[in-house]
Structures are given as structure tokens and as C-alpha cells.
Image 1 (cartoon, rainbow, N blue to C red):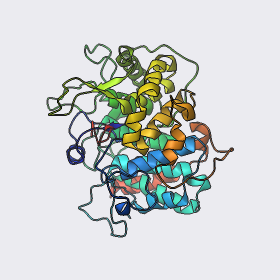
Image 2: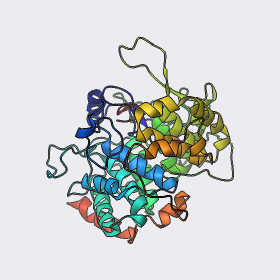
Image 3: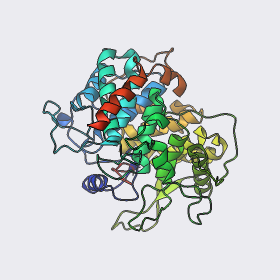
Length: 419
């Protein structure tokens, strides 16, 4: 559930901070090149990390763990070093030695995905205790900035959106915490926030879909990116979710008393219909583009594949996966580690081999974008459930207690689903 990206970096970041409509959580996307000398050691990717450094590092970790690799200690240390003293993460901190101040924009998306990634690499990390401390602190911060409606915005204090809320839910689910127990001071859960963004099956334009946020008039508009993210979150699954069984047909059903599980299945129904015509999702052309036709959206298509597989409708995602195998390699090569990670997670969710993805070995390509990871661990967790069991080395309910105390006191980032 995870993508967003395609515009100039400055425009994307501005959109994220302002929480403008139609964007989603971050993912892979091309960004201005940075010189190798200017890039910090341990970071994955060679492009400017200003708007996606933490995001792409975290997705790389999750994809590597899903394929049995352990990120290099140097890479793990880099991600740990990005965390602020209050537990939060920004999209990127160029000078990690400088304390985070009030001018630094904290990012709920970066924080949530970083916590999930750190938990996933904890078992084989050089200092698991250090990771435990970082993750506890991070979840405490997320609890403290949870909105009254139970959800999260991209930045603290911003209105809740489906993508930000969903990435936090995915991180909570992966850590073993029941998202429905993560209530705001007003007693609202993340699922309450997501249900408020779900369109009914009777909606003519987007039956069963989720909106990113209400528009200025309060109307909910279907958003495929938000729907993929919310479908996973509604099912209580993370972005590394495997294929669900038994298979089922996607249907859209309006209940007298809506449930988040039903809303998630309705979302899967919308995604299946959105993919049926071309086998992939599309995105509007950039302003000023010579080609006025909608463009293929590789990142969001990969996210939709994961969401459909996790909802038990993998059969209807097969054409989209085949389309990605045939067409996504140039996009991933240009976009970098987060794009490779999205494709790996899509292949894994469909029980396909990411090492033979069309003509590309996605695992080798991802590993080549950063520090050489440790040799594959044949005993490494191969499913999300196994990862969850070993995610943290402490009582997850301790987080909730800490969180309660704390609570008292772009769209696109650069391509696909980046903010």
C-alpha cells in the first residue's frame, strides 16, 4: 500500500505538508540526482533523498527481509540515526548530528514505515536493544499525534487521510498491536477514521473505494492509491502481506452497520474493476506535459496487486502482475530502491519469483542500490505472520501504556505514491 510519486520534488513536498487532496503515502519515484560524494554512507539509492530518504530505506529493508536478506549494519545505523529524540522521523535529515528542532517537518508516513522496517530487521541486527528503544519511542510519538478522529495526517496536526492512517495501521499490525485498540483521547480508533473515508457501493463513480481526504466541499472522491492502502489496513495487514486463502470473489456490499473488514473487501472490489480494462492503474499527466493522456502508474499498480492478493482475490491481480513484469523494469531502474521493493513485495504476495520478474532479478537489482546486505538467512521469516512474531523483543502492550501518557500531555512524492 504503499506508492505515490511523480512531480517535481519541491511540488511534492509542498503538497505533502499542506495535505492537499489526491495524494497518498510515499513510494518510489525519480528525483534529482545527487553526487555520490554528497550521499551519506549506508543510504540506499543515488538520487536526492530530501523527500524520500527514510521511506526508500525502509522499503528496501522490508523487501530484503521478505527475500531472506539482512540489511548491512551500516544501513541499519543510518536509519536509526535519522530518528529524532522525540521518536519521530522526518522524510530525511541531512545533518543527523544536529538535534531536531521545531522547524523540522515530522512525517507520520516516514515514522511508521521506519518503525516497521526496524522491527523487521531487529532479530539479526547488531544491537537489537537499540532498535527496541527506537521503536518504543517512535510508537509513543505516533500515539501522541493521533488525531481526535482516530487517524493521522501526513504531518502532526494535519487532517487525517487514508494513506497516512493506513501506513500507521500497517506498522501497528506488523508489530503485533491490534490497531483497533489504539484509541485517541476521544475513544476513536484508526478504523473509525478509515470508515469515514469509505465510499458506499451505491456511489456511481467509485463504488467501494476510499477517498484520500474529503474535498473542500466535504465530498469523498475515489482514489485508487488510498483504496489500496486502506484495503490492507482494513484487513489488519501490513505492506508485506502475503496471498490470503481461501480465494474469494470480490464483491461490494453495504452493511447497515459498516465494519472495516467489509469496507476493505469493498475496496478490493473497486481495485479489481479498476484493473480490468488495461491491467494497470493510471495517473493524470503532469501539468504542462506534451502528452495529455493518462500515464501508467507502476507504483500504485504494484500496491493494488498486494491489496488484492491479501484480500483473497489474487486471481484478478494476475494480469496486473504480468503487466508489471513486462513493463515496470525501466521505471524501477530510474526510480530506485523503493520501486524495486514495491515490485518485490507484489511478486511475493502473488507467490511469484522476484528473481525472475520478466527479465529482471529484482532482488539483485535492489541489493545493488546500497550497502551489500548479509547473506540470505535460510531460517528468516518468509511470511508476514512469522515476521510479526519476531518483530519486537518486548511487550507490545507496553507501547500502549506509554502512548496513553504521551497522548495526554505526494498523490505524489516523486512518482507513484510519494507525497
